[in-house]
Every structure is written in C-alpha cells, then in structure tokens.
Image: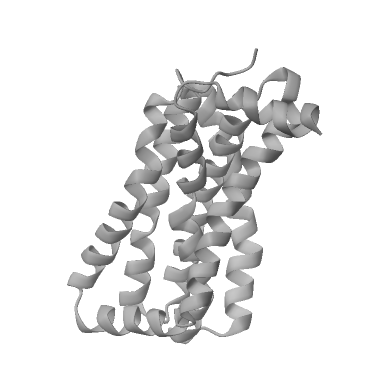
Length: 218
C-alpha cells in the first residue's frame, strides 16, 4: 500500500508549489462544471423541446467536442503546453458569453447550435490541454497512480459543485431568475459574462507560472 499510494503522493508533495498545483487542478474546470448542471433546465425554460436539445447537444455537440480536442492538440504543438492551457482557459471563460446571448435571443435554434458549438469546441480545447498537463505532472516511476490521484482531485472539484447545487435544491429557480433578468434588461448579458469571468479567473491565472513547479517527469 505504501509503495502504490503513499509513495506517489509523497513524491508529488515534495515539489515546490504543489498545493498551488492542486488548487489549479481542482478549480480549472469548476466554472464549466457549475454551468453544465444548469444548461438543460435553462434550455427547457427557453422553450426548446427535449428532442431539439438532444439533437443539438448530443449529436452536433459531440462533433464540436471532437473538433475542439483536435484543435487543442494542435494548439499544444504550436504554442506549448502552458500557453495552450492559458489560451484555452481564457476561451472557455469567454465562451460563456454565448449563454448570456442565448438568454436574450430566447427560443432560437440557430443561436442554440452556435452556442453549443462554441462551448464544446472551447471545452474540447481545454480538455486536451488539461489532460496533457496532468500527464506532464506525473513521475515516470508512479505514472498511473499519480495520474489517477490528480484526476481524482479534478473530479472532486466537479462533484463539490454538483453537491452545492443539490443542497440548494434550487438550480431550476436560478435558471428562471437568470432568464427573467435577461429578458428584462440586456445589461444582464454583461453582468452574467463578467461574473463568470471573475469566477473563472482564479481557475485560469496560475497556469502561466506552473511550469517551474510541476516537477515534470523524471
């Protein structure tokens, strides 16, 4: 047990800035995780049918995600891993402007398609860069265990958000409030996107300085 669990984590904990790295890992996808919980109730509130939602989010969305993963791989090759993390993180945050625009546009299938395309392409780019980053953090002596541990911390961030929304039991009410405010004032678009950017900033900004803390592969 010590060799397979304790030793890999102990080795990771000896690296300078390892707590910052863990915080970055936990929070990188936090804003997107919170948003993903509310999207389906949001679409239904806008008047889309479940069939329309499934066709766009599941079929077209899957293609958009694959395109994003491919672009993310190219971005890593062209700009380097940490630059790709930074760029994809900024694009993921910016992509949420589309949901604010969707709220103003209402039941518009074309806008929904474009919203899903932007969200999934940028999400795929972020996922490609993030998985590559997690892989770069592992020591070759503990590759599988350390990757599993780091992935568990990523999942912890997502499940914490799900738990918070579940405890509140009011995600649908929040969606209705968002929709109601967006219909009453277009200024809500700027507010919603700005709030998302503020929420996302702590999750994105550490990426630039993590290369000299990661420890990398030995």
